[in-house]
Image 1 (cartoon, rainbow, N blue to C red):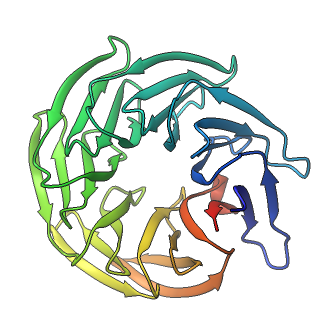
Image 2 (cartoon, rainbow, N blue to C red; image 1 turned 90 degrees about the vertical axis):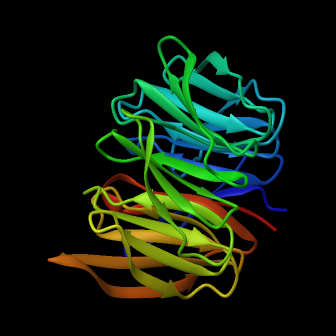
Length: 301
């Protein structure tokens, strides 16, 4: 098990950086909004903040008592939210590098947690089959969405902050309005567990990754499947759009990291989808960096 974090440059002939520090598999990574920091969570129960440079220096955050499965920066880069198998969501201050508080109403592993674009809300997804919406200031759960028929693997906010989308082991993707707390859309387009999803920055499209080895692009305005992408030879475990939406990246258990170039010409048109071997082991999560110039990935052998 290499337990490393990799930063890949998307510029031709640029080297990748390999950072070592975690003692067990790296489960999740994300660039800060400025691109000056990278956060990672690990099976070793820690969160690390890295400076993405040649030295690869990092600071360790300790408070979780089990695997950390999700890390996410607030839009201003001042806070970090993490999700863990210890059934909690934790919030940290980035610059003071201090643990602030826990959110503890889930009754099973928490797979994912995200800040809303304005930083006022937090959404979390759990193996207790719920998606919970939290008020960051009061630290109270203000609503639980219980429509999933299985574990909820991933959740994220729409760029407008008015909606959330969640992916689960019931093979579905659901979209809710967080103002009215009602289900807006329900997609049954995958034939296996849906592991990850990402909104296009325009808010008009959603890309999903599944154990059926496919990626799907959903048109949210029309409520329909737009594209199915075949490329992974095994489960597609993660997917994310770049900040400006011209690329998305996906990782899978086939040890492939795929970069896809999109262009918007009236509708979302596929220009290229070129697979490239990234590293040995499972690529669990990745995030495109500032302006889409670099990519991070975590792995385990």
